[in-house]
Image (cartoon, rainbow, N blue to C red; front, side, top):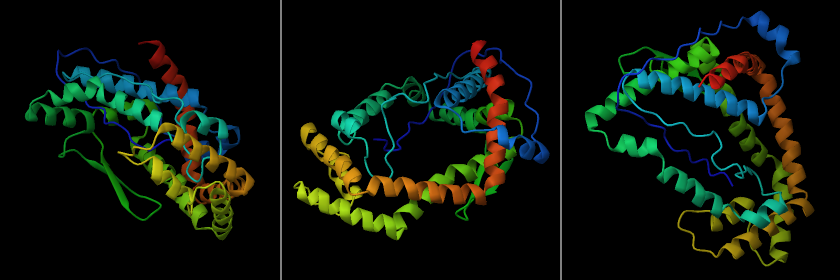
Length: 300
């Protein structure tokens, strides 16, 4: 089960190498966005991996040109990881992984063996700051700011190797940052709306009754998950699997899984409609970047 923990990719030190450079993508016009939306679709996992790899390759090339090192890891280092935002609804997955303790252990192992982390930790404080400036841009550089759907102002520096890689891959960095900031937040907003819905609350009560009948007294899936998936939990793996399988079975029999899917589709559709221009622009930028990404990955 995804706990949304991500290790920071840091880099540095070494000889200056030639930078691999690609012509920057062209900015996307509003007319192009509206003309192309009917032919667009969500990216496949393979396409997401391709864009990830291309961006990391561009970032690494940039860092090497500034005298730093970088190692590239796959977007999904633990492919069996799953995201269950409302309730575990896959009995087969639950019977193998319980509440994901084995996956978390592998994720921790990947994090501990990350050569980027070891490399960064071995730098002097001054050299480490230079690496951060190279990667994310110096504080003296310009900033891009966006108002997020939750009303917060989110900003980033428009310099550094990450910014350069995204600019080369997607074109207009300001537009890319705006549409990704907005659309990346929609999933979390929609999930909170689902959980607050009365229909979800009623289905959760039925789920809780089902769990009690199996000898597991939990008010909601979050409480059950917290009992087994928190750091330092010492519950035996078979106990975690038993509870997770019960959760998934009750999710089906109580109707909670079906209710959650229906409400998720409902609120996701509303949010995508409310932010349709940002969603359209992001999809178009991503699809236009795929061909470039393939060229970048094939050239490595």
